[in-house]
Amino acid sequence: MSVLSLLLAVVLYGALLWTGRQVVRAPSDRLLRAVFLCMLSAGLSFPFGLPAVVRFVDGLTGDGAGKLLQNLCLLGAVYFLGCFFIHSASDPATARTRVRWHLVPFAATAVVASAAMAVTPHVERAHTYATADMRVPGVAVFYLSAGAYLTYALAAALFWTVRYAKLASRPLVTGLRMVVAALSAMVPASAVRECVTLVRLLDGGVPRPVIIGAKLLLDLAIPLFVAGVVYPGLVTRWASIRLWWHHGRAYRRLAPLWAALHRAFPEDALERTPAGHRWDVLNPRSVHRRYYRRVIECRDGLVRISPYLALEAATADADVPLTPEVAARHLRSALRAYASGEDAPSEAVPVALPGEGDDGLESDVRQLIRLSEALTAPR
Image (tube, rainbow, N blue to C red; front, side):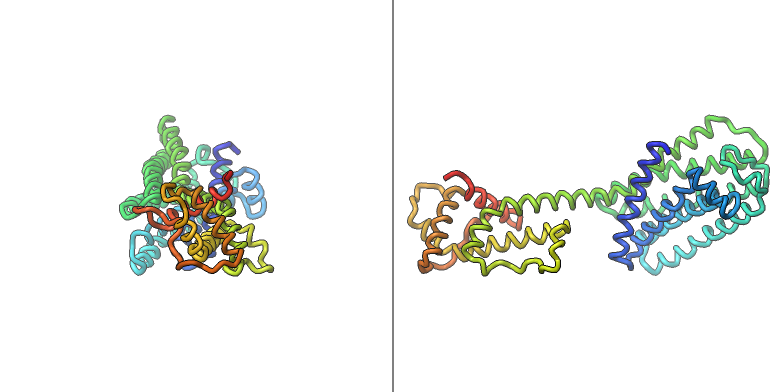
C-alpha cells in the first residue's frame, strides 16, 4: 500500500467514524445519513482493492466476486453522494421523489454488472482494467455498464454540487468548491475511460497518453474530492478545539479570584458533578460547563462583596487610577472586612465591568481575568 493510499484510508475511515457518530445523535437527518452511507460505501470498497482481500473473497465466493463488490460499493458511494446534494438543494418531498428516480439506474447497473460477471468465463475474471480483454462480451458489458453509470452519476453530482454551492456559506462552500473541482476532473476522466473501453471492444488501439492522462486526472481528483468532503468537518472540529482550549485556559486563570470568593461565600457554589459521574471531568465538553460555572460564581461573589468594595473605593485616594492592581487591593480589604463580620455599608454596585463599546460574555470574562491575575501579583 502506497503512502497516498494509506493517507486516504486514514482520512476516509476517520471521516466515516465522525459521520457515524453524528448520525447516531441525529438519526432523522437525511443529509447526515446520505454522507454516512457515501463514506460507508467508499470505506467498504477500499479493502477490495487490496490483492490479499480479493484473493480471500474470491476463494470464498468465486472468481471475480471481489472485483464486483468493489465496483458496486464505488457506484453506491457515488449514488449516495448524489442523494446528499439532491436533499441539500431540494425540498423534502421533491428530494424523496428525485432520490427514488436516481435509484433506478443504479439498481439497473448493479443487476447488469452482476449478470455480466456471472457469464464471464472464470479465466477472464481475474483481470484489471488495463489487462482485461474487452472482446469478451461479459468483460465489455461489465466495464461499459459500470462506466456509463459512473459517468452519469458523477455528472449529476456535479450539477447538484454547483447548485448547492450557491446556497452554502463558509466553511461548507470552500469544501464544495473542492468537490466541484474534483468532480469536474472525474467526469471527463470517466467519459474518456468509457470511450477507451468502446475502442478496445472494437479491437482498436488507444494512444498511451490518453490512458495516462485519464488516470492522472483520477489520481488527482480522488484526494481532492475526499479533502473537500471532510474539509467542513475538520474546520468545525478545529474551531471546537480552539474554543475548548480557550475555555480551559480562562478557567485556570480565573482560579485565584474564584478561590478567594469561594472561601468567603461557599454557599454560592453551583451544583457540582454528582459523585457517581466523577469520570465526567474527562469529557472534553465538561470544560465548557466548568468554565461557565466558574464565571457565574465569580460574578455572583463580586456582586455580594461589592458593597465593601464600594466603601474601599470611596475612602481611597481619588488621584490613584482604578487599575486591576488597585481593584485587587480593594478586594482583599473588602474580603477581610466581610470575614470580620462588619455590616455591608451600602448597596451592591457594578464591579469589573467591560468598558463602553465592549459587550458580551468574553469582554466580561477578560475583566474578571485581569482582576484574578492581579490578586496573585506581588503586592
